[in-house]
Image (cartoon, rainbow, N blue to C red; front, side, top):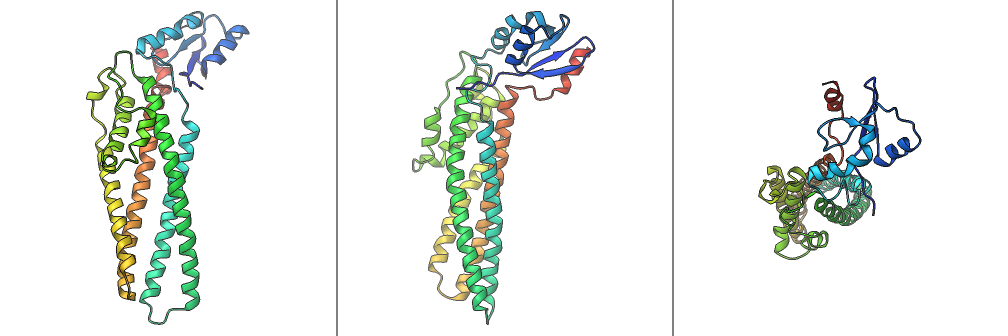
Length: 293
């Protein structure tokens, strides 16, 4: 199990700063490569301290923060990048799908369509539908794994005595598959993750989740209903006019699906930025100012 500890910032007598991991700083000290007047700072410390105090100060940083861990229980960086790429892939395949659907509508409205054009567009549609299916299934499974990883890490950000989390990593995934409860519980899982990442305090459960999160969830539910209804209409269409009308609805459903993926990309980035801010300094430029003062 890997643990990402807060970065250590060093400053020499001239005020020049460098950043290392805790293990790297320990190696520099062991090799005698740091000057005695070197100062260090770790997120959670009130001020810069002499490097001679480094070995004894790291546990104090955690104690001051009231946390049981210094960083991620399992670093989510790699998984987060993969999830983001799959969300982008969903957007790209969705946009290509819109184009092939529009071509289909043009062919339906053409009184003398080219048979070869029909055949070519049908082949493109079949390929894009397969790509969209694979991107949705694989991307969805990876997203759930990411939710479980974020839930696991959130437990390490809470101080001792904090209100317990409602969802374990396993439960945070299972609730997405339980009928009816999956209309509400997944939102509650994500809302709790944002509450902890924003307010890692004993009363985190009394804090508010971002307002845009509920808008994303309601939009996601509405898109699901819209897509189901569009599929039903497409299956019942018999005449070219009915098919064209159904395809127009399918275009709207495709646009809605793209917005869900874009919202998902924003969600993943926002939560990871907030969690990483608890592990690493959010604005290293502020350290130079604090050193000068």
